[in-house]
Image 1 (cartoon, rainbow, N blue to C red):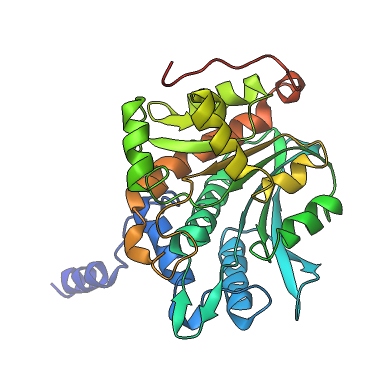
Image 2: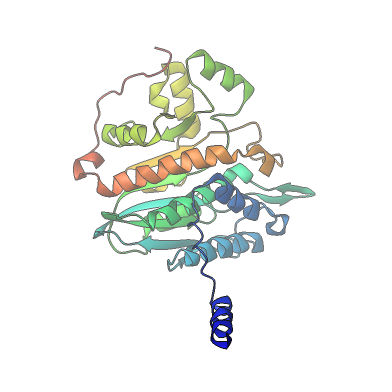
Length: 326
């Protein structure tokens, strides 16, 4: 009887084994939205370049990169009291060739009593790049990937100009992916929404793309990654609309600094909304489901860029077909 009691007590005191929790999906809408929430916190005061708010935002992204097992580094950016770029590397099988992915961290700060939180511009892009980066750490990559969070974009793309002009990394950059404003329907302005609907564009299922007019293989790669949703580029549109889109986007976005050095670049975004550069660019205007949909597609784009043949990065002067409003 005593022996039975001892055995029973031992059984009761044995450690209980719990199942490991499922791994967190870094591209889930809830995860991406949490990044946006952190970046629009009033304590960051709108993340103006070269301020304590921008530095706090960089601290946030650096902490997330460390949590992924990456080693973030800094590149000084000469602007005001000092800005910076924060970057980290994911080595692929071919370390001599690199795909750069990036998003700018800064926004407009405060003007008087008005806080320019920049939820879409560009907390949304930073959130998606963080999610994409975490997902890429679980992939087998051919080319290496370097993720860069740029400072001082709003004053004139100074961070990306600094990085593209003097990359602090080993290897040849063969392509760049930029994400800037990605959490709202495409060109979220009433007049443009009507025009897009008239020529067959679904603003809820489409994402803007700049940079592939002369790179048909890269465009095909993006189309495949985004399916069954769509990417829409200026060259897809009737000439009068497409020309206006190209005029408005010319010379804008961090990807431009890489294109200036002959590096093919894909710029994904939702275009300018009614709240662009306004205090009304707030958290409630960002749609988490769109962040997830686009984030998953962009992660596929990066994986495919990392394995694409060299011919995919060759420029072509062939005229791309019109896809809408023909």
